[in-house]
Length: 364
Length: 262
Image 1 (cartoon, rainbow over the protein chains, first blue to last red):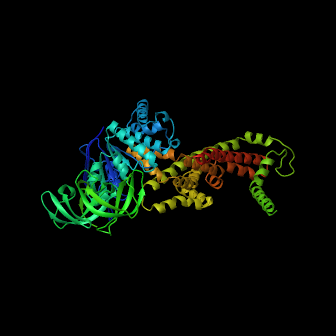
Image 2 (cartoon, rainbow over the protein chains, first blue to last red):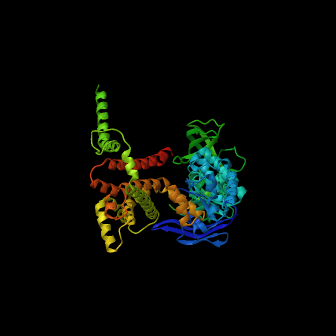
Image 3 (cartoon, rainbow over the protein chains, first blue to last red):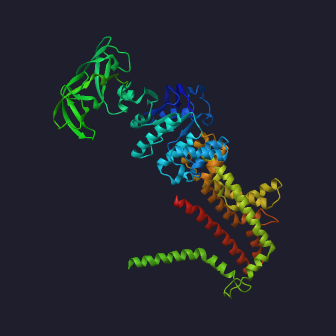
């Protein structure tokens, strides 16, 4: 089963601290949503509000079109998968997975059958008679997933479920989670602070910071067309080049920066209405720099830059550059494996127009 | 050389300590097999006659049965009340919870004599007649703090999410407690139960002051002793000791052994 979820103007305060500040969100049925942000950004609070473990100070939560704001967790069509798995240590796996069905009055034989089915889904059918302490972290994780799914929730809430796993296992579990979500079709809302994890599994990512939603969209949009400086920085390495809007016309705007004046199409401005003389920052990902003449699309030359340091990363060289026009600025750029990069080398720098995103300078 | 000396000294020290603790018990057990009328040296030879006498003594056997009943029933009640109190204080915000914890543990610091006198006064005031029940009440009073302390200390925060998960899967509060919390805490609940059984089993002052016609074993032994030393008292004493050791052995093997493994 599956259901749409919407949050209307949810605010949660703890004393003087505002954990969630007027958040509104619409999630479609069957979507895999990731709430992404640093610790203390309000993502876990939002998840608790969806699960019913906390109630919003103001605002509304709708699940499947019904108002759930003050419905307790047990009565919601949601289940939560906890960060520390929270398996019942004294029960066999089949009883762990069947617990929710037992609470719903399902007979033993029937719930055993269903529990085995869900253990099969996560690849642990043969361990049905084991107890949680006999399992590895990744296996416990799968049992927790099976237990949460066994009651056919409309919405599954996942609270940093992969946080305790090592990197390799985490990547593997991400793929499994995504595959299982596709199979069962349940709406998943997943909390993490790992942007790579978010990109790996999400249909849409909600980037949160200081109790607010900074950005919301498919991973590629969030990465390539971020709508806030925070979102751009959180999703991966990015160069911020400050500038000022000089003139605006219907299709483009001229921005003056330390590395030269750049005429940007209006579509580069993802966040706000353009005003002349506005202060902006240009966001350029390290992999978007080109050597002049290298790219197919129209490029903007940014002048020459001196390599001040470089390191080989396997897929690319990561270089620190100092533009000749703005020696105060330090730019990080990725150069291809084949590039022979040496410190002190002078390289002509350019970037495709379409890869530049211009955002209003952040409030702080 | 110096190592040798320290080693000898530490062995001697350990020997003295254990001798000090266990010599009286060893002497008691030895003279329970005395072939003669007096449990004092010299040891005249080995005989089981005093054990026969113990098992033939109806009053002693009745007292033994009473002790079992009182120990088990009072320990069950003490564990149940201790568990409920621990659950409430660990999981809910209660007014003055630090004070309440203190009040629950406080009886541990009060002497059994004072507790017995207090209970005697209360029971008199309400016109409740002394019986095994009143002894049991006394033992609940002394064992409840112990059970509470043991169970409360084992209720960690990591259990909270597990209980929350159970609730999220639609378990009612009572089902969470019975199906999740209590089984998770079973090792410490059993430890509390068995310790409480041994304390109740050996307890004399409260049992003496709060019982009348039906008495527990320590009280019966006391009345035997009033008629003078007799190897029969040694025999019954050895049996009491044996039961305590057995309970401790069960505790050690089933609980502490298990926790070491996990």
